[in-house]
Length: 216
Image (cartoon, rainbow, N blue to C red):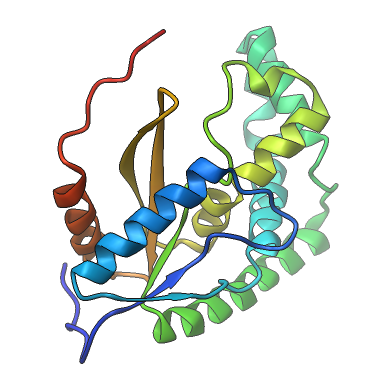
């Protein structure tokens, strides 16, 4: 469960912005605070953009919805309530149609993305990035139609990209802002969960105990 220790200070790629995404100030603040804590603990933090994140997130949507149409949709439309049906349709509106050739090409594209990220994580073994580009959404934000769902998918792209690539991603709390939780995501290469856990321990030691969230 532990890989070889780094030869020197562990290089951390800090991503607080990417073209085409709007990042809320609370999210940027959490990332910067986390970066300072890691630097104080001896990590070498550098602002670096990860490769092709939007492409990876869109691939997650395409492949997930292709699988869902075949394996999930019949049961969902039969047994699900109106809320889940509406959210599902809004998400499906943004996914391309798929046939066998398109599916195979998508899997091939995933392999290329995995290679690019593997090379990236050789240079920067740890990536510090948002959990979401946006501060937490209000309840039922996924019930406002396809346009609102597009905003949700874009906001959650840091989670979707790492999921389709099969990379360890660890969400770490960074306290409350305006009564809502903030956090950061730590990402490492395959089988290097130990790097995420060690960095998270540094962040948690600085942050102190996490308090319950006021349900109001």
